[in-house]
Length: 404
Ligand SMILES: *[C@@H]1O[C@H](CO)[C@@H](O)[C@H](O)[C@H]1NC(C)=O
Ligand SMILES: *[C@@H]1O[C@H](CO)[C@@H](O)[C@H](O)[C@H]1NC(C)=O
Ligand SMILES: *[C@@H]1O[C@H](CO)[C@@H](O)[C@H](O)[C@H]1NC(C)=O
Ligand SMILES: *[C@@H]1O[C@H](CO)[C@@H](O)[C@H](O)[C@H]1NC(C)=O
Ligand SMILES: *[C@@H]1O[C@H](CO)[C@@H](O)[C@H](O)[C@H]1NC(C)=O
Ligand SMILES: *[C@@H]1O[C@H](CO)[C@@H](O)[C@H](O)[C@H]1NC(C)=O
Ligand SMILES: *[C@@H]1O[C@H](CO)[C@@H](O)[C@H](O)[C@H]1NC(C)=O
Ligand SMILES: *[C@@H]1O[C@H](CO)[C@@H](O)[C@H](O)[C@H]1NC(C)=O
Ligand SMILES: *[C@@H]1O[C@H](CO)[C@@H](O)[C@H](O)[C@H]1NC(C)=O
Image (cartoon, rainbow, N blue to C red; front, side):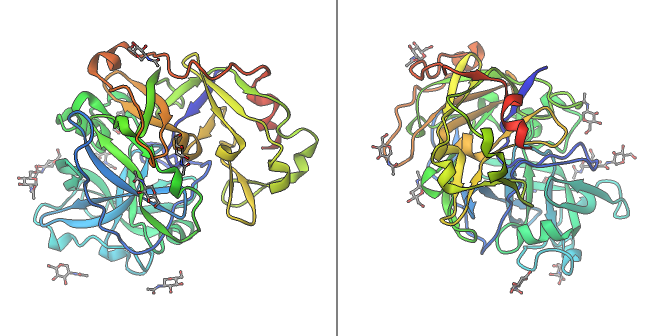
């Protein structure tokens, strides 16, 4: 049986326009629209954008749609494929703090299949309904005419709650493996229209703003680089791992094959009753018990990637929760922001691979080895040779799944 790691920034999943979804951490979030400015160009051809962290673990970017542009804060979600924003018709059934798209105020707006066609996008936490539409999109350095998106006129209660305060919609950045007929995929469109130099984007998450209080926004919560990677935000080399088919839709996710998982010591053992599955899809765990938890090492592309308990257990000061989950009924791990805080990630459309390098914490400059086209073409990579191979190698079924 293949074990798989899905590097999902926010672990929401939707199938192509159909309802069927679950989530590992699904914490979308809330408060006041910040103007998220493009910062100085980073590495190579790449332009760099700040991501806003809301509530510790949900990352937002600003996009605009229409002519003249109307601006929205959208959740960056590498685990789903559609872009959606709420429309003015959603006044009553969307979050009261959302910006609403006004179709009459855009000269370039059109419905994809007429205003009568409705569709549902379902996520692990929450779902929305609306009409498929088209308009021009601007996102940092990216401008794409006539992009397909959902103009939403209904958010269910969980989605509404999650969006109250800060978020307006969701920007799906799932892989969709070179499926050019999926012209709603921003990732594919950017690549096809040569707006993603080298066919890559990369993400750094700011450890200083992780596990923040529930309703605060940090405008410097992370960084997204289009067409490059910023060597001041990682150390050493990347390890690249080929994207594999994770669900029935080929190459839908940025999913990779997971090797052995090493745990030095017992994670749950006889303490399974101390783990409580909560409504948000997390396991909460006794903070005192968590102090005894071992390092967990994931082997990816033949290289060990280790998370310590401070990486994978979060605390809001009162309760502690596991940052690793699985999807009910699926043979998958979802390893989202906790992994991505520790490891800078690169998403390579052209070579169908994901790369990880040890992230710098952003307070001191990283010493990353610059990423070049030949390194991308070569793939693989030595990564983190100095991290010892775990002594005690366990399959995930022997531990994490036991308390699912
Ligand atoms: C929006 O709704 C929430 C409850 O869902 C409420 O607490 C808040 O005061 C409302 N805000 C505004 C601006 O109406
Ligand atoms: C939408 O835009 C039109 C044209 O600019 C304007 O007349 C209308 O008041 C706007 N509607 C809302 C709800 O803002
Ligand atoms: C639009 O309509 C076409 C033709 O009926 C259909 O194939 C397509 O799936 C529809 N698009 C969406 C996003 O629902
Ligand atoms: C929007 O896209 C159309 C092509 O679909 C283009 O003619 C128009 O100039 C674009 N508008 C903006 C504001 O970029
Ligand atoms: C947008 O794309 C659709 C479908 O390809 C096409 O029918 C329509 O003419 C396009 N609109 C513009 C303004 O390019
Ligand atoms: C490509 O995308 C289209 C539109 O979303 C979908 O109908 C089709 O099944 C996809 N093809 C593959 C091979 O995934
Ligand atoms: C990381 O977050 C801290 C706290 O908000 C901020 O002071 C710092 O500038 C951020 N770092 C970067 C590189 O954005
Ligand atoms: C990084 O990769 C380069 C080129 O493949 C190699 O020469 C170098 O030894 C690697 N450095 C480390 C620290 O792995
Ligand atoms: C950031 O990393 C540097 C180098 O590893 C370390 O010296 C520093 O204490 C770290 N700062 C924080 C806030 O973790």
